[in-house]
Image (tube, rainbow, N blue to C red; front, side, top):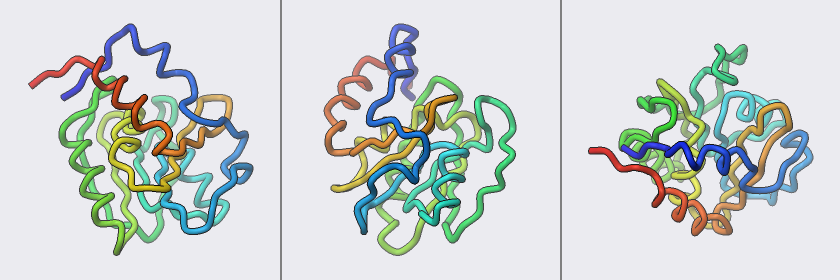
Length: 163
């Protein structure tokens, strides 16, 4: 398990990509592999007709029960991931889902918190992947995974590893 060190918290609050008011404002090339992280982000993508290849949700929005009941044609995986961590279980779930999305869409339902799932998603993402995640009270961030892989790897090296 990786634990987010206190000194990185502020750094991770800054957008990793371009901030948009809504996912509908973002340029999305046809055929792009799409990963969404967060309940509101996934809901908003579905609302504009975009089905993520992989959605990662925790049924919470800003630590309160989500008002959205997210349903679409996706296979469900479940895992545990306490706040401020990236568990091996979350990492493995993302890896398995990405490997299997050639046939099906997947939704990972996290018991705990999905916020940090953006980092393993960036690292594990196939070529031409777009990752959407929410920026609280501002909008949605669009990350082009291949452009951010190195930065994500550098950040994860600063996490505390616990066995």
